[in-house]
Image (cartoon, rainbow, N blue to C red; front, side):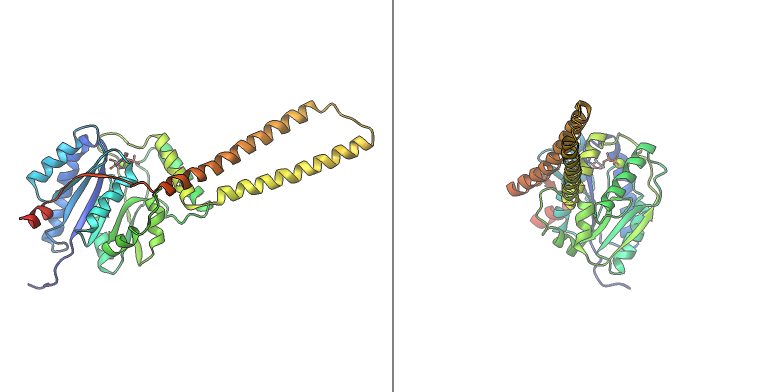
Length: 327
Ligand code: UDP
Ligand code: MG
């Protein structure tokens, strides 16, 4: 009995969308890791792995139920329908917050090295409320994914969004930081940006990112682009400001043209000028449509925020801790 202080309860939150091919392997690897952590006395034996089924169309939920009924380590949360990675993650974190002292979020495909958990817990014991997992290299990602990801991080930084390079959603968050997170009411949630706003003591842990061992990426290019766009428009109004600046510059240029035309007219050199007319027409129309588009993007965002619809709806929750309380 060297340590009488009760150990902290850790919940690992894993969003799953059509992850039937990986859940078996993922759950057994997590089981080994969690058992080791519990036996080493680092976390309470009431710790759980919480799988969040984000409206999967395959047998994901049945597998989660099976895991839960054979082992109390596993808990499951079923959303009413597919709401996307960020919302599924948030649903899991908010549910875990009621039962856990500390949470770690990770993807179902275990591309993030679960052995980094030890370092996460070290930092947590040192008093960090948030620990960010950062990929030390992206060698295992495809060149395309690497390239687009780099562009994304650079663009975000350029637009003034505070974001950690190569940090995805593998991170530790304490209960009190989660309480703070729950105060952010926005509907368009971009966790990587919001968690940075919470503050508290934080640190980073580096790890090697590996390949997805089964199943395929749930982030096709289209989803990736809309994710990037959401991230930017949720955190930065610079695009709107840039549009204004461009508009002003174009206005200055056109003033120059007008003066030039008047002078030419007074000197009696009338020009045919069809080509210049057409060029400027198309150029300006393009810029105008783009500007309207960007402004519209923000108005759309305001529209969804004003409606303040729920970010997710919980269908079912299964957790041995809750079942024990009832009996
Ligand atoms: N995911 C989800 N809902 C979705 C899409 C993805 O919960 O609509 C989950 C998915 O199951 C995985 C994580 O988000 O656990 C990351 O997805 P994925 O590994 O496909 O993305 P990548 O690693 O290729 O960026
Ligand atoms: Mg993945």
